[in-house]
Length: 293
Image (cartoon, rainbow, N blue to C red):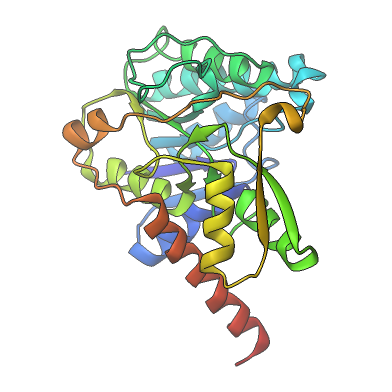
């Protein structure tokens, strides 16, 4: 099947891919940190591709600081657009398949129906714009690609909403959480499994796909479920987005329709609440192991 290069391996999704690949005993997967695999260094990429001759390249490297991106647009663009273009060029030269991770932030979030891959994009933030630009540089360079848009990633690895809520819940009796932004949490371990399934199947059904867990929820309901399933007695109070102003506007509705990835690629997708239980179980097990119990 050939080698698979994972760029951005030190991030949340990269760590999830490492865990799932180890669990599945997936061969020939090479994990590259930001230093080892700098997507902004064309010469370094040329050396890596020449050395490893990858059949697949998974790009988990991205500028994801949504609010900071408003002040660092050019840096975000270099990473989210130019870095992707560098990878796409090398993939085209070597016949490698590029798997690019994108985001629900490419949409305005003003609708009320699950978003299809064919729906019009209209990013309302610098982050969303630069991620969309990253999508758009791929097709002119290669037709051997998968773009996977996802949303609300969390896991037992790195920093994310779930871990922030559990930390705050351990410190406070009451938390105010936004209820008028709707989407779907995505367990990054599930997304990692989807990516490896694409690679292992060697499917040629290239293109743009949506992937998140099943179901619909708000940040308020997600947080409430986290505390409920963690047995943490935290009172959650629903608030509107306007009561918690941020530098960047977020999509109010970003539920992704997964019909295409399920029908074309045969991907099975669990409900977000079931995956949340799995993640919390993993966190509990790691805590017990850490304590030596």
